[in-house]
Length: 293
Length: 287
Image (cartoon, rainbow over the protein chains, first blue to last red):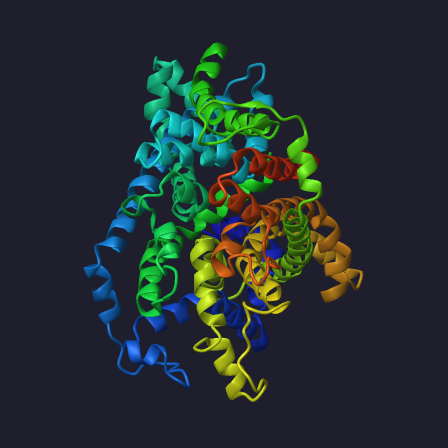
């Protein structure tokens, strides 16, 4: 028993123990709290606006805390079919693009992380360079190509565009993840007589789930948020994605804040939930994708 | 698995990227040297560098280029300072750190276009939060038209950009901070280097590669800023917040001038390509 305690003690570095003992001063907590509040504030204010009755939205002095919150703005919104449509479009496009990136990117990343062949390094660097292209340099020609192919104003068009746009990032995140899976697992499977495809499917894939979740979430969020390509490739109102649809909602003259605030909040709610639940995966994937080579 | 298998696995992804990203960029490059009208199908002719010469005399192009550079050169250093402060803050262990990290991550996840709309509401002249608070506090006497006057429009846009992207900068720098061994700070402590001295002597030098990578990455993003000006100010007042991407978008899709617009985006592309070469080199040097 004593030996175990001794071993555990030795395993905790003194520095960590010291950091755990040292408690942060009060001003530090105040600062951290202020930072958190500042980061969430615009969204909070948007939410507060969205639950105000219309009259209070344009009141002077402004109502900082609506004492009688209402869901009227949300009700109006759901009655006008547009927004529901926009969100549905976003779900379809981002969902399909995410699956596309995971399927194509998973295979590519596995190959780049594990197999040694000529040109591997060049492909990695090439993908990274392509992901730095300004989307504005891609869009005019992509628009012409897609017009020729009849892909303008179709889901497959934007899904293909987003899949390509986020594939490099996805491959980078996944390749970095595959490198962390011990090769021994694969070798063991091979010794047991597994075929390569079988090994990939039933040994590697289950082990890669956290990496796939991280890459998938990041791609989903980025696709949900993508603006320029979605604006150009889907110009029909009933096909617009949530971000584009809502940003064009105001129209020429009127800016109906009561509906806008509710619509905006509804369309960022999925992102809020995803980041909240999967924070760890996202942070890990993002930093691996951007800072490791 | 055999070596050739590697090629087959990577091929589908390369094909999609090649056909959907690389080929269009090459075609755009070709368009920038051609006469092309969307109406006359296929009737293209060689235009040489005439579109590029046109850029030289194009006042709006010049203005948008300068705006973009000013925007990038102000926001990126500001983000670096903010991001570094945030990273140091969330690197330290304290109770509730998870929640603070979550809050810091959140601006990254917000769609830039909708974030612009949220801020537009706070900047609103008549009903906006900022004017209300400042008026009630007696700091201003008249409501300020934040997005409609010069130079407050550009400043307001920069504030939104720094607010939104400092968090991403912080995440990148946090990864760098976590790689610095704690022992260095302990031996530093013995030598009397604590607080600011430790930050300057230990943290900053060791973080330099991460800082370089983060600054280049953010610099590229700032140089392509599109959704923010499009949704916050529309480029106004009188083009003072118009970025290169926004100008290119206007030329391409509002004036439907594909060949001239292509020359605008190619200039942008070349600058970004240079930056991305630097970024890739910095990444290699870091690891």
